Image (tube, rainbow over all chains, first blue to last red; front, top):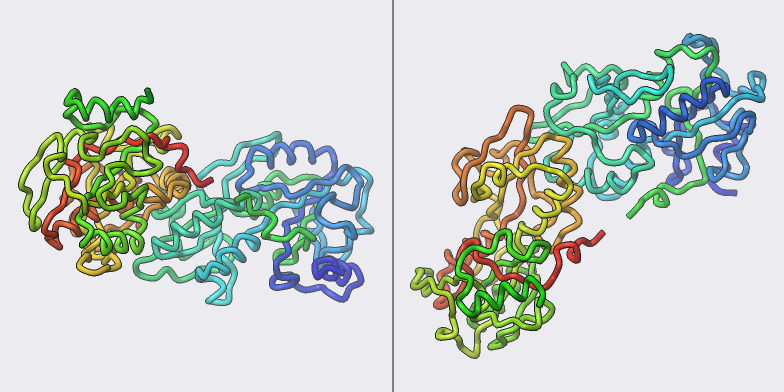
Length: 258
Length: 258
């Protein structure tokens, strides 16, 4: 059994209930959004219009519990270690299985996550400050609007990693190879130019140190679709719990376009 | 006849004596260095060790007046519109033909030039400030040492083009495709980090305006080998006169690695 499949099967049988960071090294992990068909079309268009924050790795048809190409042995209602269930934008439950919530009109979206490009950055010898500091990557709400689709609209959320300029250039090159997992940065340098007032006060995650001679580098972040979703208060929605991702059978290296 | 070949033939017959910028659009133009064999080996090693400032497009064997792959109808002693002849590091003559100086031990080096990647940047819709301002690109001596080889050593010289951050990211992507013409930038942001004291006082070329919200982006520059050469005062050397380049039959698009 593939390591990735083992993670899903362990989650399915309640043997794994914790975060997926570091599990099944080399395999693509994804953000999960599940929406009723009535909202799914708008959300699909939103993703299509905003590929940098919402790179779609796979979408199910209504009611389908698998997502083609992400893994054969995959049950989207059981294989994530921890889910969040939302009604009208309010969190109503965190649970390890959403079979009880399943409906024939639910559509599942697997959205690329920065874990994939972070693996490539680390393998090239770059330091990721939030990993060195043992905390979450800092994320910020910007003043850059996304392209709206139906009820879905809102500002771009970005993650930030500090680098020396030569490493920033290298990081741009490396992440440009991975358009399906946020791709190249959306901004470098002065945080104020994208509406970030205080780099030490991220809206999500944890602050990290920026050393002398380093510059902040900003990537579109998978928190964007979640933030946009919650603001639009859909009647019903299921997501993964933060850090408890869908582990797919795709390899990160397969996502490289060059 | 190819447009590039026409430029060389015109230079050969004295019909063209001015700069080559804008001539034979789409064709690769190159910096020229001609050295006696006794210095050529060290210089070849210097170029090999410093590919970003000294990307070699072609080298002749001693005495050979052609350079394979750069053009069939090519006489390196006549086909550049204007030459500079140096003895012991001193400029002794500027002339349109160096046939009278030719020796059987001379080796010619064609070194990539930023014209090639500038064409790609312009075609992608990026503004090049020095072109908008109708002046030369600003160039700076840095405190970054090159990798020495024999008598050849000295600091890296860089060219600078200002961009908004998103355009800087795009410029890094585009120029990364052109390693044979300086490739990706060597630095972005704070000029002081590479020893540039005053961005408005370039050592070569002209200062350009950097607008609010823009950042300077620095590329390794083909002036580096010339600066290194002159400092080492070889007994004899021929170069092109600034702006009067070797026009080759290579197309810029052919140099893209991706």
